[in-house]
Length: 87
Image 1 (cartoon, one colour):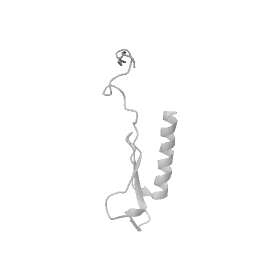
Image 2: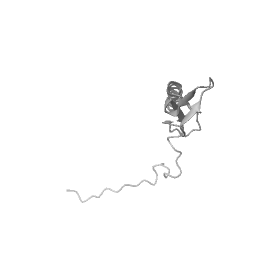
Image 3: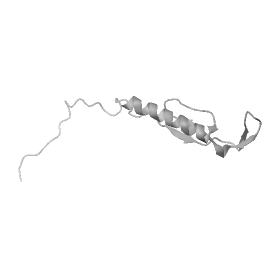
Image 4: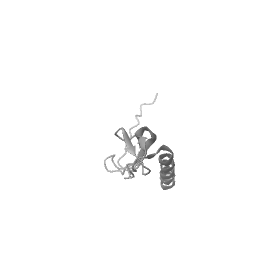
């Protein structure tokens, strides 16, 4: 074995400390179920909140309670926007 010991010197590496680096993930896209038992639709029918979903993201996106299919479409659209930003 060699007597030479390897020492790591990062002084000139140009990497900023973790606190100074910008966050890599400005998005945190998620589905959430709204609080409460039920709501009335514009047509006047009572709809269970289990059929509704809220889409939120750390970038500031927050939707009202939407039907699950509409929420899924909005989620996919925003996910595509995130993908385009990171590309």
